[in-house]
Amino acid sequence: MNPALQSPEVLYLLRKVDANAILMTEEMFKTQDFYKLIKAVIPELESTPANCTVSAHNVPSLTHVIINSEQQLRGTFRLKDVMQGAPTEYLKKRDQISKTLNCMDGINIQFTSGTTGHPKAAFLTHYNLINNSNFIGKRLEFDKKEHKILLQVPMFHTFGTAMGILNAMNHGNTVVVPASSFKSIDSLKAIANEKCTVLYGTPTMYVDLLNSVQPLCEEFPNMRDQLRSPVIALSAGAPCSPTLFNKIKDTFGVKHLISAFGMTEISPVAFLSLLTDTDDQMLNYIGYPLPHQEVKVVDKRGNIVPMGMCGEVCYRGYNVMLGYYGEENNILKNDGWFSSGDYFILHESGYGQVVGRIKDIIIRGGENIIPKEIEDFLQTHPDIMEIQVYGVPDERLGEIVAASILLTSESKLKQDDVKAYCKGKIAHFKIPQHIKFVASFPKTETGKIQKYRLREMAIQEFQSKATNIFN
Image (cartoon, rainbow, N blue to C red; front, side, top):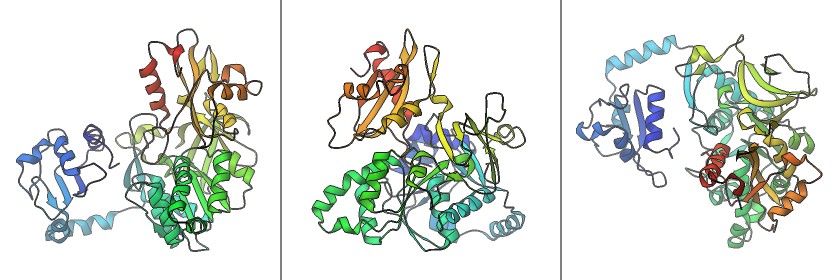
């Protein structure tokens, strides 16, 4: 689980997956005290002696709370005691179970990012994760050359587990973990000290890295040259703007900027750039399909659309999850095809292009507007580092277009400048009526921007007068 979650969120997830046990550390994570948090979820810990199972009213399936601690805390088992003190009958049971294991068994209940609401519990198998991570490494030629991978994304999502840890294990590469949670300064120091050759991150993480380079180099004048060891920078979670793309290449000297696209439910990568891709291919597409999977793009009736036309992308193959935990028999319909919820274009070349999430579509006066079209256009402005476009309520039109924009540090751009840049280049109804310049976006722990929260915050702040938003 995400270590930043609070007690109501932890309770939701424990119930969601019928958890039998919790394993945690005694160490603090930022301001998070895990034992205190779990006591809020399971009050019975206070009345349960150490080394005893707990009867949890809030989570009936839960019986064991295990903590990596030297203390004998109430209601918990110490991890070292569990590791050393397994009774003979448990060891026999373990050996019996190991003989029946199958590669198609579920190994990981992986929670989705929660960018559109509550996280879902994707049930992934050995076969899903090992094969997907293997093909990722082969596409990036990790099997041909040893690399040091800067893993600044968390391991409680598939970006960190499959693309990071399992990928490196499959191909004998080194993983460099700069900190327990993302800190740009720690990542930069790790690049310099460990001579990392591969960077993993989201666009937001790369923005933070770039903004931290100058202060770090002022403190350590020789640092700039030491930051140019990376050969590959892999970006996932959101599109990378041309401005950000060029800044990454210029600052870190990378030869290959790689785009990855997929979702937790497909273990997680479906599309990945090739090392031979041109800058244009890397910028305008999200890669080429990984082998041994099927991809199709369909209309609302489920019919395959022609190449180059927009529709919903669907996946079938080794990488598709068993289902959402507790709903395994209800998700994969139509002969095993998984519907992604992503608007997508598959080109004749085989390269993919994301249009946006179906849930993000803005309906303005009966006109369907795809936010990513506006985002892609505005990201061509040299002063715009990142942008998020979404709809907000309007009494007359139903919804109108709003934009939150992160500018480059030296920019003097004004709201009217943005509108003027759009005029005559995109349809008038696509031009954002309300614009807010921001210092940061609400994000998940993996660095994915939570667009639904931007919309919720706008509605909450300006719900009485939608027409006054961002004035």
